Structure formats: C-alpha cells, structure tokens
Image (cartoon, rainbow, N blue to C red; front, side, top):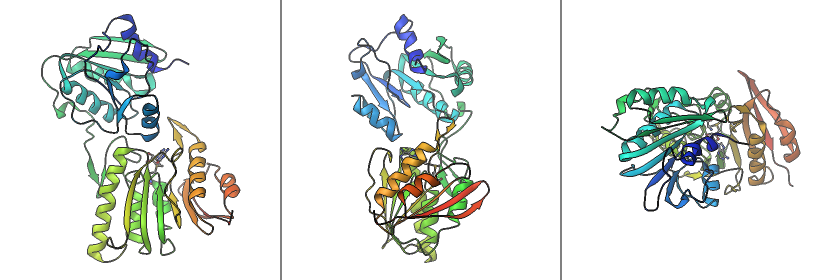
Length: 353
Ligand SMILES: C[S@@+](CC[C@H](N)C(=O)[O-])C[C@H]1O[C@@H](n2cnc3c(N)ncnc32)[C@H](O)[C@@H]1O
C-alpha cells in the first residue's frame, strides 16, 4: 500500500527536483527505507536513525546508517522524514537547512496525520517554499537553500535536552514531560527484594533505573536495554546522577560494587545478555498511535528467555492490556501486586522450564 514514502518520491520522479548524482552528499534524517528506483543513488545517501529496529532494517537493506550524524556541513541535499514530535521535526529541518550548501535542497515528507501542514507553514515563514505535492494522504514539500542559516530562536518547540525534575530528557522520547504515571506506580514496588543482576527492558531515559539505583541496595549489576539511542544517552546521564547522589548520601547502590551497562538493543530481535535475577519493565504498547499489546508480549517473551528458574519479572501495564495470558503461559506464578491510577503491576516467577 502506498504511503508517505511514495509521496516523498513524487518530486524526484516528476523532475521537479533533481535526483542525487554521483559524488554528491545527501543525508536522510529520521530515515526509513526509501522506495528507491535504480536511478536514485542509494550509495549517495547517509541515513540517520536512532531507533534500533529501523536502523537494523536499513542496515540489512544496504543503506549507510548511523544513530546520530555529526554536524551536517556542505551537503547537497537533505531528506527529512516526519517524526511524531513537532520539536524533532523542527530541529531536523534546522539541522538540514544549516548543513546545506547554497542552492542545496531540503525535502520534508510525512503523513498528513504527522503534522506536516504546520511544519510547512512554519518553514514558509522562514523561507520560500519551492514546491509542495500531496498524495496518498501525505505531503512532500521542498526548499532551496538561500540566505542565512536559521538560528535556534526559529524553533517554536525548543527541544534541546532539558532538565525537568532533575532529569535530562528531550522531545521525542517517551514521557518527555516528566515521569510516566505507570512507571511511578511500578517504582513504588522497588525494595530490598530486588537483588543481583537486574535488567530494565525499554529503559527510556532511565526513570525506572534511577529509582532502582536509589531504592534497591542489593543490586549488583544493572543492565539497561533501550531501542532509542537518544533516550539511552539521556539514561546514562540520569542513572549516573542517581548513583552519584546515592553515594553522597551513602543510602543505596554503591557505584563501586554495582556495575551499570547500557545496551542499544531491539528487544524483539536481539537477545539480552542474561541470565538476570530480576527484569523490570514498563513495556511499549504503542505502534504509531494504536495501542497494541503485541510489542509488550514480545518483551515478556524476551524476559522469560533471560530469567532462570526462580527469576522474577516485575512489570506495569494499563489495566486494560491483556498480558496475563502470555505471562501465565511462560511463568510458573503470576500475581497482581498493585492496581492504581489506571495501571496494574504484575509480578511473575519463572518455573524450571
Ligand atoms: C513505555 S516506555 C518506558 C520507558 C521507561 N522505562 C520509563 O518507565 O519511563 C517503553 C520504552 O521501550 C522502548 N522500546 C520500544 N521498542 C523497543 C524495542 N523493540 N526494543 C527495546 N526498547 C524498545 C521505547 O523507546 C521506550 O523508551
């Protein structure tokens, strides 16, 4: 089925904008696999994609891809694929524009539901829109570099990493406005029982690991697994701060005895390095805008595989998400530990097989 990637190709196919030619530098921000014809030179594209599952797909398809590109300079063209966060879109447009050489092309594309129209309006106030096309419920528009670089002040939704409630968080991450209610309900259960090798699956910017590091002194090793590169980098800062604070107060996990490891990992396709004594998680339950328990089920399977007999999984979920059946099929005992504010906390004990 046609989607915004078909729409992205329209101006190239019609000749409204020239295809990259050999020797040019083009980059793709928030990259996804493009519907490349032979004429489109995949070799000329350098992709940026921080979400590990898409990164792995791009790599398997032969793209040159990095989780973060260094500052863009003197590039001939830049494709920006819409992200669900307006702030991320603005930032990527600014990076692309400022990295272009004079006359270079900045092309933005996304589904109409991804907020392309407001971004086009915003860009149109900064420079002339060179062209725009709409098809397949998606929009593509493009700009030709002229004049001065854009200053940070043009961003209507500033997203530079910020500290809120002592945490480093940035737009585009899960719960970018502060700790998630479900995660807070889960963290109320963290205590002395959690010990040894512990993993935080889908660690985000590190809220749960931060709470583990400050509330569970019997942890010997903490492993954070997260698919989003930027979130994982923020977690390094946030958990590092928690450990420094705990040491200063001499209250919780001592950094010299507990190792903390950060893994950029797609838990649906890459095996975590268990075995663990405990896995804790607030699993993702969204694919785009839809709530789908499937991703959570995949996380439960990954947890079951990395826990030995007697190992425990402690997780939180919206009360309406039906994870119990999957848990009961893979664990010896499943218990509802708490229910509050629309969330349930489930604890599952691994059996001997
Ligand atoms: C509901 S959020 C929880 C984040 C964090 N633990 C918290 O409590 O604030 C789920 C996290 O899982 C991550 N995630 C999504 N798909 C993933 C995958 N395939 N592998 C690893 N992590 C993934 C998301 O990026 C997100 O940070």
